[in-house]
Image (cartoon, rainbow, N blue to C red):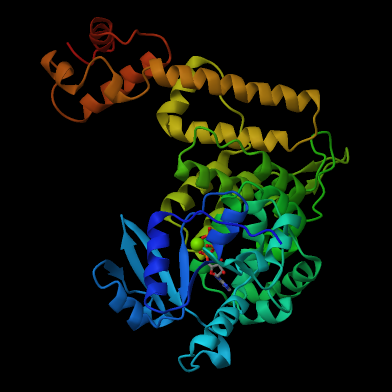
Length: 456
Ligand code: ATP
Ligand code: MG
């Protein structure tokens, strides 16, 4: 068999060697082994060891330590600003308090530690010279693109329901599918996700939605996901007859999430967009009616969807910027965009360029998940045209009071008494500028204020 070698960063290697030099069995383990074998750069390097936490602490007493996880057997060692988690071999359940094993049992202890891990692709360990320790066929599953529970899936999901969502997250991250038995057990057990804390659910859902294969996972495993977000269930099979759509609401949602173009977005923008795309049509099943022509209508689904999005995100204890950002997008995702410079400037004034950029990205993803008809193409072209003009005006236009060529001081110098009239006048002048009636220049603005008899 080919002996893979994984290139460890210097600091991880030093930790491993220090543990081993002190006589403790030790390996890098989990996500870093998985990612290395896939040729991806691991986010962090976790170690597992036979050393007890107090031994690990003593060994690295010269370094900055993070001890928040010490009661679960984890000591964090900070090297060059990065935390490396070193966790004592652990067995969950009845064996958790087993005695400190001797050297022979260390191998057994590693096996036990790997056995408690969630998926075969996450249950591999590695040490230089020994190669990859793969007791559950993780390499085979990596090659086949399969997320498979270690051991009996029903039992593993029974121990920790969060693993159901983790399976979806890894599938979305890696472009994998779930092994059939794992998928079946996940669907059977998905209601148990209701008992998982909001924080843990949110973290996994967020990781899932932000992953490159999120839409495909939604399309394929929606019923499983519904264990965590039951509101999505009525979307499945909610048909959309008429000339616009070729998918039901859920498949449409999945395609929109999958086609979302996040280029140019920062992390917050990307997060807001992923969640907004996920939730944009969440109220459609409630708002559905079918007209005399046989076409479906979803009147009010924007506003009602915003209320639902807010409730769902609150329940998940999502950050406030995400709740507000996603709900605001859902609330107007389907409203027509303004045309003409005056209206575009006013929307810049009201929403800001960051929000409008997100709105355009959401609208494009939404439209790209429609039937590919000339009508849809025309709407898509409207969004692109709006986006281009909006960017231009965001760079060159005047759409905020601060950008006006006169300020309150100028108006008062010209004779306007201090008071609320100052703000009102600036507002009127800004409107005149946005509407193209007055150029944004000092002279013409003061002239306009005089014409309006605001200043003598
Ligand atoms: P990521 O790159 O997302 O951090 P990861 O594989 O490192 O991926 P973590 O959540 O950091 O994932 O967990 C580290 C390791 O701990 C996993 O690879 C897995 O072996 C194990 N693990 C984490 N959570 C669970 C769980 N709920 N049940 C069983 N094993 C788990
Ligand atoms: Mg990790």
